[in-house]
Image 1 (spheres, rainbow, N blue to C red):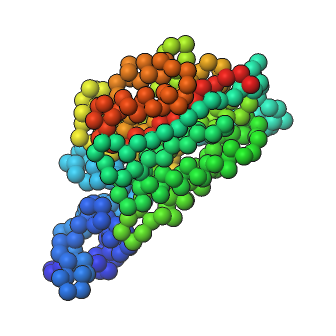
Image 2: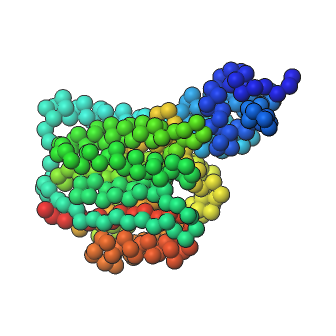
Image 3: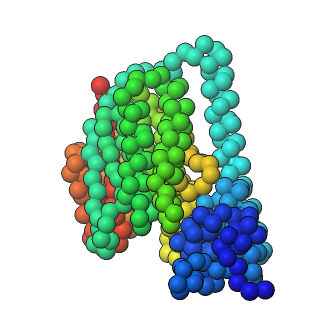
Length: 355
């Protein structure tokens, strides 16, 4: 059998021509030949098994970056990777189910507002970013206001900057509305779905931008945290620096399964491959949490342009060195630049103070 046209191949693989053009653009499924006169893509029938696998993985919601990894594995390893992905999806679904149960119980009891001895707090904050020393464009977005703190890291390439900006913009209306603390997570979940749709809306025939997002929304003395991807949130409390988020990367999944240790993960060539991101799948999967904000707390939100190159101890030292958030943001960016700044840098520093 000779080469197949994109239409015939799409029908046989149960994909669309638009999807095939996207997979060609991202290097996931490259045509066997391209007609030099018409530019039509032509496919070898031998590519059908891979194409059908891609179609099936997309149907379970797997992001393109993860599919690329799976398609490069031997069958046994690919099967384990799919199983690991689905375990993570199941865990996330269970977490949302637990949250739903809490909300149902709370609302069934009359929806009394959650309270804390320190009923109101405020934040002093600053945001900053830097292109870095290697990149020629900046796809990161950092935002800080009295109620909303956010960092997003768009995938490098066409639409990356627009994707990160769209994700943050989708959350900004939340900062204009006072809501009970119990409603924070519900509102954030809805806003994340809006952000995902906004990022999907930036797609072209040849490119589907994706972005990470990590944000904190303040109401009273409560902070609602939303996280997807490998941007991070840290808390400095009592001199101790804690990581509040877990990277949604293929390498982190391997660490969680005991297949890699942290030293191996830090230098792994696939350490930046995301398994979850806005715009990266049919259904967004975000981590949500509710925290109590205490006076004296200092929060750091940052892209991996900072966290991947600056040691945790140096981050803690910089956060503890000065009381001024703007000075701290500049110091953190300088630290990343001193390490070569191979990626864009975005960070937000916020201090919790008594209102």
